[in-house]
Image 1 (cartoon, one colour):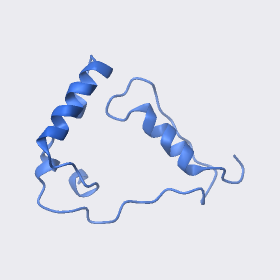
Image 2 (image 1 turned 135 degrees about the horizontal axis):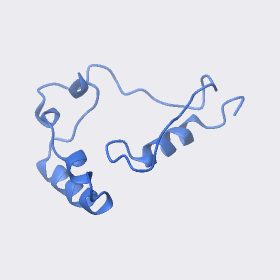
Image 3 (image 1 turned 180 degrees about the horizontal axis):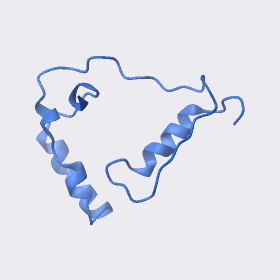
Image 4 (image 1 turned 180 degrees about the vertical axis):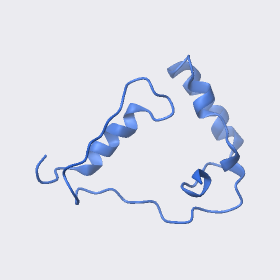
Length: 90
């Protein structure tokens, strides 16, 4: 269940701000991708702690992304690549 995977913002104003920003950034679908979900009101915290991504681990990782996906922005893929650091073999 995705609601227990992350600590979702609980402030309605946070979602309002994100919708306004994404309407400008992604006029075709942005507002829908940033809109509030039931997870904002889910009655529990994440089941497990968030995974820390470091420069340790395998180097045979494929990161596949595109430019126009407001639900998973390209900035996230770039941050992931940066978090992997200089693993051996890269």
